[in-house]
Each structure stands twice: as C-alpha cells, then as structure tokens.
Amino acid sequence: MDVFSSGPNTGNLVVTVGLVLALLVMSSRAKMLDTKGANAAAILGLVVGGLGHWTWLLILLGFLLSSHKATKWRFDEKKALGLSESSDGHRGWTNVVANGAIPGLICIYAYMADDWDTVVWVFGAAVAVAASDTFASEIGCLDPRVRMITTLKPCEQGENGGFSPNGQLAAAVGSTVVAVLTFMAWWTTTTDSVSTNGLEFLTVLAVIGWLGCQIDSYLGALLENRGYMSKGAVNASAITGGVLLMSLYLGIL
Image (tube, rainbow, N blue to C red; front, side, top):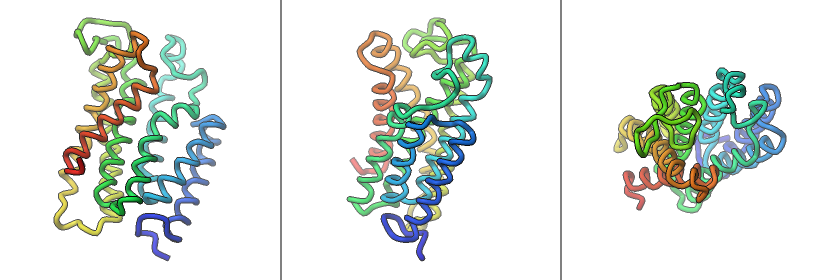
C-alpha cells in the first residue's frame, strides 16, 4: 500500500480517513470546534487529504492545534475585555469555511492539474495567511501598543486594522510554523527534490503568510470598519492575496 503518492489512491485515503477520525476525537476532547465546526472540518479534511495528500491534512491539523492554543492563551482576559471571537473558545463552521474553503479548492485544482509538487506551496500559502492572521489577532489583541495600519495612529485593542509589536511577532511565528509544515509535506512526497530549492520556498512562504496578515489588516481598516466587507470576506480576500503572490512567485500565473 503506497502512502506517499498523492491523490485518491488506497494508501493515501486510508491514512486520510484515520487522520480525520483523529481530528474529530481531538476536537471533542480539547473542545477546539463546536459540532458544526467539527463536521465542516471533517469534510474539508477528506477533500484535502483525498485529493491532495495526507501530509497536506497534517498542515491543516497543525494550524488547527496551534491556533486553538493561541485562542485559549489568556482567554479569560480576552473574554473580559470583549476581545474573544467566541464565548467559550470554540470555533464554528463559519470559521472553518472562511479559513478552509480556499485551501480545499486548491486541492481540487492540484488533482485536476495532476501537479502536487508545485501546488503544495500554494496550499501552504493559503494556510499560512490564515495562521498568521489568527496568531496576530489572538496574541496581539492583549498588547496595548496598538496602532492603525493605515494611519499609524494609536487605536483601540481589537479594532479592525490595528497592529501591535506582539501581534506582528505572533503573525510571523504563525506563518513560519505553517511554512515548516509545508516544507515537510513537500519533502515527504516530492519527485523533484534536486532542482527545487525547498528551503527557499519555505522562506518565501513564511514571508507571504505574514504579508497576507497585513493585507487582512488593511482590508479590515479600509472596508470592514466601514461595513463594506464582513470579517469572513476579509479573511478570504487576504488568503486569496497570499495564494496569488505564491502563484506568481512559482510562475503558475
């Protein structure tokens, strides 16, 4: 049974199903997702693992686990200040869709294009932007040194478009975590490790993930605060921006 080949083959599907089941168990025990969120994550996991590769699913799981830790970090303080996105730290299906829909579509593209070696980096870029934004929001919201990204003037903690030193550092960490996981996924399955500089791609991916977080902040300040875009639309737009940047770098576009 071949577990290293990408796409819908027996070995890949068996491992994918096992990881999805593990996701559901972890989600229930750690209270990472509510019921609808867990169901949405399971469907997304089957698409990502089945059409991409189970190592791609590990990238998503790494994002989910690390973002859950970021969400729970000093959660009571964030809740008291009105800075938490949920009342109990759970993530719902809307959050799963906002952060996972584009990665899921990328997996469909990889399968249709029969190109997993290159597209894994585009997939990683989408997840890196989501991770960077989540880390920045969950860690940076408690830093009082907040400034509006469009004017650099002080603003309220948790305000859309605000950034802080701790938030920027957290954004870089979140993006780098996903970049490392993406490199590991690529290295596990690649058929072209000689001509492709994986470490270069890792570095570029980490930077693009961080840039995607800045795009999110700009859109939040310019459009979300004025009621022109919802939070989900801003997240999806920032992720799309990261995907386009990585695709341009790889020469796909």
